[in-house]
Picture (cartoon, rainbow, N blue to C red):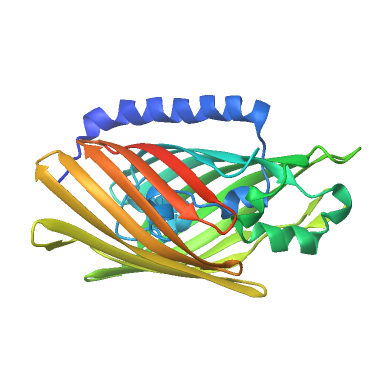
Length: 320
């Protein structure tokens, strides 16, 4: 991939504007869609979704810390994304990240609005079983649930190992409940990562925190994620990146991986094709995507093919 010169004096005001955009998005999203555990389980990045929801660990994209908070130490930029499943399910993400001298911080807002089971069926076991896979987002609208996850992450390097910590505030609303239709809680993520040329490997413990109470207990989807990715390598006129991940939770395992191929006929203009496979309890699904990068700005697209239908996601990423 073409080189990018980091100009500290210019990127600071841009990222301040990016943070303002995230806060504005939060204000707008709060009126329409608030949070639940589903929001923290959905793919956090358009690029990663196209690669089987396996984030390239050697990359410094703004969404990196949502896959492993240790990656916040080098994450930079602003990312906006919108994803759609069946009616009325849709999600929005807004992320801003900034790093300097081996220390980085990221702030993210993730919202989801989707159909939900009747209140009598939203016990903790049923809710978690649904939440571990997005196939239910193609279901009948019925009662709707809205979700919000606001995350702050920080990362640095200690004794040659990248380490990071993230904290998330969660809120879920369910219009099918006559009372106490809103619940909130908090969780944290912790991660480590290390580069071994030509690979970067990371391990993260995600969504650790107390249950929510929404007339019944809703457990946190605590899980462990192991990821590995190659550095971008030239193959003739192309740049190639490979990535993979395995995620485990109580009673289940998921996995994914993919390959990205980039071609830049002239400096500053890059065409990217992506493809992958994602495995979950509901089955194995292909993922595809593409991007066009013009200097620091990238327009991205990704799709995942479920048995129930295809979800589409578009994203805009600025990386100074």
